Image (cartoon, rainbow, N blue to C red; front, side):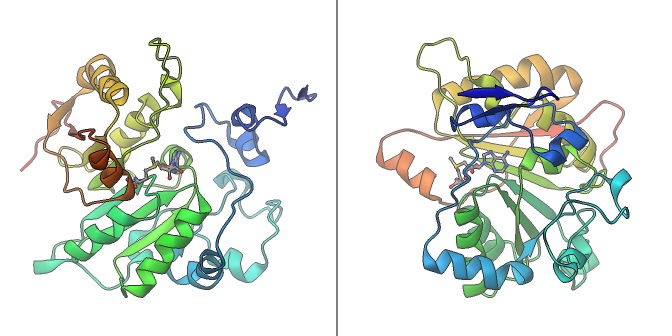
Amino acid sequence: MRVRSSDGACTSRSKYARATVKTNAERARGRTWDLTFIPNTRRKMSRRQKENYRELFDAHGIRFDARPRTMRGSGDDGSTSDEASRMKRYETLDWDRAFPGGGGGGGEPRRRVLELGCGLGDNLIAAAIEFETYVFLGVEVHRPGVATALGEIEARGLTNAKVCEMDALWLMTGEYVEDASIDECLVHFPDPWRDESGLDRKAHRRIVNETLLTSLERTLRPGTGRLSVATDDDQYARHLERVFEQFARPRGWVRCDPFARFDSKYASRALEEGRSCVDVGFRFHPPSVDVA
Ligand SMILES: C[S@@+](CC[C@H](N)C(=O)[O-])C[C@H]1O[C@@H](n2cnc3c(N)ncnc32)[C@H](O)[C@@H]1O
C-alpha cells in the first residue's frame, strides 16, 4: 500500500518501493539519484557482528555529521546520539585525522583509496595488508558487512583501513569529500540490477552512473586519480561500456589499467559458477590537465 504525504514523499510497506522514500536528511539536501541498494531496515546481525559494531566502530569506523553544512551549529540535527559520539563525527573526510601517522615511503603523502560498496571488506582488508603505505576507506550501507569488516581490521591490527556506513553516492555528492583528494576509487562487483526482459530497465539503479562520475571528476586527483570497476555480470559490463562511451569519454575520461583487485566472496562465487570477471579502469584526464 502506498501513501503520499502532504510534501509529496511516498511511503510504502513494500521493500522495493522504499527506495523512493526520502529521509529527513535527504529532504534537507535533496537526493537527485535513485538508490543503488535496497534499504535493509532489519539489519539482522550475528552476536559477533553486534559486538564488533558496538565495540569497534569508534576505533575503526568513520561517522559523518549528517546535517548539511548550512544547518550545522544550529544544535538541532534531529540526531538521537549523545554529545560524546557527536563529537567524534567528521564534518568532511579528513584523511589525516582518520589515519594519523605521517606520509608514505620517502616522505610522499599516503595514497588514498576509497572502496565503494566494500561488502564484508574482503578486498579492503587484503589491499590494506598488501599496500601498507596506502590508506583505505571502505564505504558500505549494509551494517552486517560494516561490522564484519570492523572485526577483520581489529583482528589484523590494521591502522591503514577504516569503514564508513553510508550511501556512497551520498558521501560523494555531498560536501564531505574535498576536491582532488582521492587517488583510487574502487567499485567491485556492484549490485548488477539485471533486467531479464532485455530492456535494461534498472540501469538507473547502478552505482557506476553519471552522478558518481561527475562527483569523481571533482574529487579524484586531476590526471592521476583512477576509478577501477570489476563485474561478473555481462549486462553490467555492457552498461560500463555505454556509460564510458556516451557520458565519460566526451568529458575527458580515458581508459587505463585498473588498480589491483583481491579475492572476495563475490569474485570467488563468480569463478565457481564459471563466470568471468571484467576489470576496467578509467582516469579523468581533461585536456587542460598536465601530468608530470
Ligand atoms: C554485490 S556486493 C559486492 C561487495 C564487495 N565489493 C565484494 O566484492 O565482495 C555490492 C555491495 O555494494 C553495497 N552497496 C550498494 N549500493 C551502495 C551504496 N550506494 N553505498 C554503499 N554501499 C552500497 C551493497 O550493500 C553490497 O554490499
